[in-house]
Length: 347
Image (cartoon, rainbow, N blue to C red):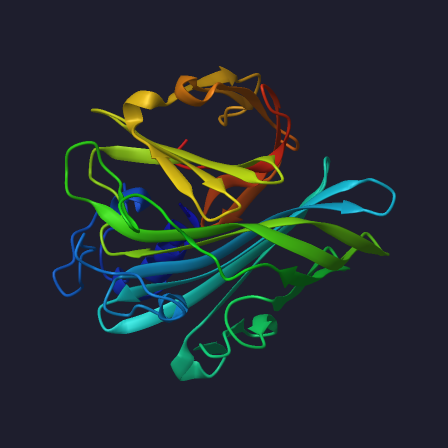
């Protein structure tokens, strides 16, 4: 689930399509709920196959390639990185945007890039997989993995970068019903969605003038569709949590003025995925001390004896590209202990 898509849309809408229209009261999340007859809708009959699934899906309106990683330096300091490349279509034009972030417990750095293939600053190809926008890139030697991921930026005259090696099996977990992932409790709104949460990472980051060696674990998500929200839906809370070295948990809740929709999956490193429907997921806001974003959640999956308290490590992990949203590292404890990522939108 990526709210960054809304950031794309606000940029495009303000620059392209609504120049002559009244922008007052424009709800960007409602743009994700716009039905577009010129693009395909996801279907239960669609079969996801690899490695073709990594290719752009331009018959759909929106898509993204996403990776986040929880990293540790040689001295034991925790960092998080996140990189997303996404495409959205406005009429017959395909726009690509990317965002990246680097954070620790008290600092959050983020950056944005944009472009089009027609302008020459975007390259997406498969066999071998390559995704590049300006000088940010994901390059592999064959399929998606193994790969190199690099991005950089300058903030307040301070340069920062990440240069990471991604190592893992090309083993992907189809979310929902064989990759058909419903987004609404009653309406036929869905995406095609798969994940790889077991990626080993080594490399370096440059942060506050220091070059730091890092290692850790990364999580890859790939999703595409056309109508991503319904008009009654307000935003979402999305979690990626590593319960242990062999088990990963993904949970999201799409909030609604009517009935919220929840989904969860447990992914085992042997390739097995177990999905949970809304009625088996208990997710509650734990605390909101200041600001508009929850600082913690309680998550309970009684069927699997999972009972967690999830807390943001840095409450300032907020992306501000047109509109703002939270995306960053979390820690959790309870029946399991570990780290992961949280995205919160629509608050």
